[in-house]
Image (tube, rainbow, N blue to C red):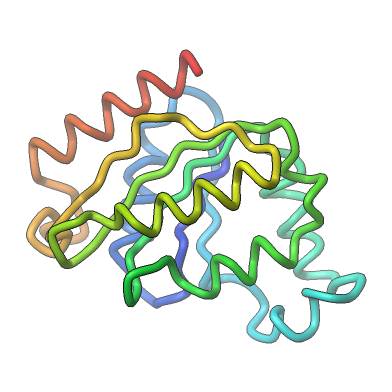
Length: 169
């Protein structure tokens, strides 16, 4: 099972659009986790406690039952969104151990979230998650999506290549 994680809680985000696109590309059973769907108070209610029933259900369905992850990471202020870090901190680390991940970065600017993906790779390595080396960087994301659909040929090619590599990883 692959869980594709849209790394922001922003409504109608480009990350969610790309995550849904990936859901159609994945070679095996997959599911999308949009961080906007987390309980609104999870940072305070679930990070340092047993966790709410709703949060625990999300963790069991989307993290524990997955053996692979695709993280769609937007660049916010030179890093990745705080909600993604808070989510990772709220999930018991053992639920990530010995799993695999692929990353794709999105930005309005020209770097395609290069720095945030590097930062997040370090966190995943700390959690004993192997990270695929192919990390597409989608720069100027607003120009690559039309009517909620990824239309840029280069971006499509990068994502398809990553999925092919992820199958073999």
